[in-house]
Image (cartoon, rainbow, N blue to C red; front, top):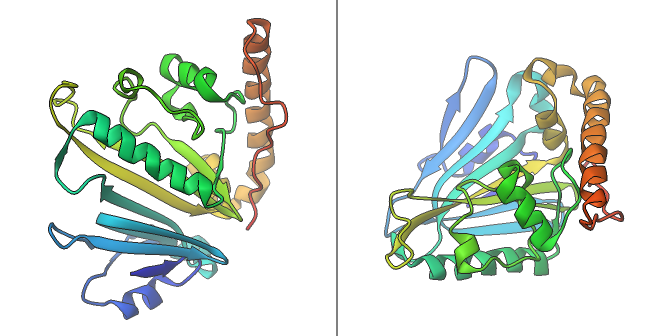
Amino acid sequence: MIVRLGEQAKSLIARDPVRLRLDAQPAGLDFVRAKWREPDLGSVEVRHGSVGLKFDKVLTFDATQDTASFGDEGITEIDVNMMLGDQDLIGHNEARVLYLALLESLRKSGWKSTVERGMPRLAGRDRFAYTMSRSATMGLDVDYSPTLAEWMRIESQTPWGFWREGVYLEVSFMREHTMLDVTKPGAYVVTARVRTAKEEGRSLVEPVDRDHWHAALPGVLKQLDILREGEERDLSERGVAILKDYRDPPLTD
């Protein structure tokens, strides 16, 4: 299945009316949804301009269009859940290797690692240590490969953020919390969220400000910059290296 950021939800459904269903909410959000079951799992390719991103072993697919407020933008967010391996259960180290290979394939295809706005610009193990001890929302660095012991410490839904040519991508995993014995198999699901730059910008403002996000965003970004500067100042005083050349990606397509 191919889905394009910016296309209308109804046009997507028209291409596959058997598989896809429309869930229209009273608040004006339209969701296009699909599910697959083993052994016939799905394949979803997301396109936006010259950017193409393919997901295999897909379990669920959700595309969102804000028909009420931004209907002319079409679909602005896509969420995909997929299996990590070929079986429901997988060894934890095998899961680590497969997941890191997925991240590496993204990096090699041009996706650039991002740092959450408002968070200190850290890399490598410094970023891993900060995320583990301070804030899981900080996310992790694609250029750092955690050991198996470190992998087992990562909380479900800790993100790895990426950006490429006006598209934001967040990848994370969920694992069954009752199956954490490293000597026994675990259960993993990988989640990917793809957003347009405008939708990324809207996600930063309060829900009440969503419809006039352009006006609210500068103040939000200013506050996030202040938070980042304070954290970076404290970390620098403790000898932690800051990525001073890093710049947040644009919030325009």
